[in-house]
Amino acid sequence: MTLRMNFLLLLIFFIAGCSQLPSFLDQKPPAKDQTIKFIKIDYSELVGWSSDNHSKALKTFLRSCSKIRVKPAIKGLGIEGFGGSVKSYQRACDAAQMLNTEMSDTASRNFFENQFEPFKIQSLGSEFGLFTGYYEPELNGSRVFSGKFKFPIYKRPKDLITSNLGLFKKKWKGRQISGQLQGNKVTPFATRKSIESGALTGRGLELLWVDSAIDAFFLHIQGSGRIRLDTGEVIRVGFSGRNGQPYFAIGRELVKMGELTKSNVSMQTIRTWLENHPDKASDLMNKNKSYVFFREIKNKKTGNNSVSGKVGPIGAAGIPLTAGRSLAIDRAYFSMGLLFWIDTRHPLTQKPLRKLMVSQDTGGAIVGPIRGDYFWGSGKKAYEAAGLMKEKGKFFILLPRN
Image 1 (spheres, one colour):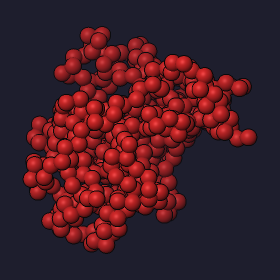
Image 2: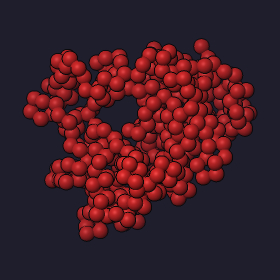
Image 3: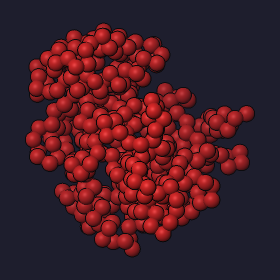
């Protein structure tokens, strides 16, 4: 019997034997008619719709089609299948594939309007939610441990088991549990503090070594990044798994400590605090028990692992992300490959930011139905925008016309 099968059987007995489930397992999103409302609207009600670059959005959507096509056609998308069947998206993908990818914005806009209809999303009576940003960081690293490169980036341990709880009960759809087998028991995997203290040392799991513990911490938050090796080569690493421990926002803790305020907390101010308090930085970072494991990303066509500036990092959907078009969402509510119109503000200029996006990623901090994480790309400008983005906004979804 395989390790995975052992885990699943033990998990079944664990769930069946619990009269009261742990809170993180018992978090069922209320019925969609109580929590989420989808209000049909006209495209004329999407402020800024006609001025967006729809041809870029179409190219991003086509990338998601490569994954949508291989899904079972009868499968439903989103909570209780509200997003329609996979088949309806496959039809839209077929129609998109027949178009010229270099077609005009007007023609691309006509495609979306003919194939999809817009709905405003409300949650608990409100149409407003939170939009944050993320980017692809670049770290300095080496394949060899040294006095300079001494902070490990770990690959996924073989004994880390992850199970989709939706397979056991409908109400847990979109939720996962991770752990490890110790004898005949399923136990939580090591926390960040335990791992940083050497829990994985000696197991040959070091993928790379980097020169900054703070940079490594933020790599975990972003989920992927570039590593500039001491050989001059630049490679890319991507998400390979999470230890299953709860995510903890250290920015919120700094506000609680009185070190930062709600108005000035950002990726930049958190980093500055960590750099200025080396004696306290580790303890604060370890409050976030969540730990991410990585894999080296290679170009499928060439087999080369060097970074191409034209291709973004791989998101949770398994396809390259597109700066300004890829959105991370909560998979407990939405599926990968859905179309969203966001209405929020640019973090640097405070001008309206209204764009058609595609759900192609997710993250531990992305929780709730009106919650989006905007992918800004790579480089300094992307870092500045992503770090400062904490904007109120509205969320709309485009569903296939059935």
